[in-house]
Image (cartoon, rainbow, N blue to C red; front, side, top):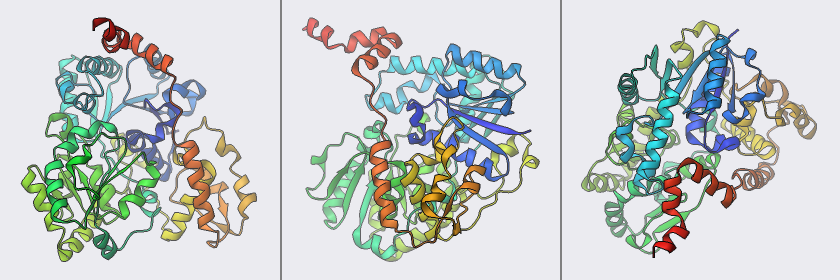
Length: 481
């Protein structure tokens, strides 16, 4: 029996689906493996005691950090003959890259704090002999670290990040003419750790906006930006947006931006900012990194200097050039949509355990309807909940039958047997507006985890790093004054 369990170590806990890294390295791979005919589940590490070990043959730990619980659990798996893998999609284990960490560069974390985390990643790394990484530069760095730690690695394989087709089909694409007429440039950094990256392109962006008063720049997320650097009325801030809402924003953009500092840490990153944009027919202007170079096309402009950024922006004001860029971006980005044999099964020599990915081609209207339905009933994190054996919501999924009738069976791109056998909906005449309203309500209620109390947060910081705690303490600062 071949059966996979992906374990996320996301800081978001039960809300790990909100973590882009967990989606790409746990949720999406589990979907792909299930679609190949091999069972795969996903949990957060805090839920590991609720699963039955005998149900699995392979367990993948995403971004594991050392703890006694982790050590004990990995030893238990090894004793049971279960194959274990450590999976990385960022340069988290290299002491030389501490000063290049986005958290450090953005001022969100001190270098000393980051170094402690690196040591924790290294200590956890030594519990494993098999590794998956998301890019070739990351593999090179992991090999160097393994050698420096005098640790032996049996396998280090590159498994590229990929998107499921359902993510692309959940939103209606915007016409080239409409995007060109509106001209909204969007920057979607994902986290607040990229203010320093954005600052690199503030000058050419400001110059461009002054030249083109019909263009709007919109920054998404909780990131500090000096708004006074841009022409009044052409800069818009938008707060936190749920991941499942991002396609709607991307699809209506004229261009998307992905600036990054040129350093070793960023060169190990994945090129997902391009294909998330390109798949929706939106060109992207990005900093050059190794993984993104696989997608060279006219809808992907790689820029290093202010002059290059400004020239790329100006080029897109020509409608003919823009149309070509939109078509090229969409065509090349399809390389990042999973439609063939699952890479992880190939890496393990298990291709025969499953079959080639079966993608059921649904009309875009059906795909969107399915997404709206699932979001309305189960919240925006339904793909993660669906794959989590500790979640109770889907044990009662048959109530969907009672609510919507059984005159039409809708089978999405395969996720798990649960969905294919239980989800039945009536015809497409279901009021999508009603579903959208329900969906908006569930997203606002369910998508953001409750913030930990100040006492709890401070206590954890004190235990983790007493020196950092007292250095940052208001009491200490007041005393010093």
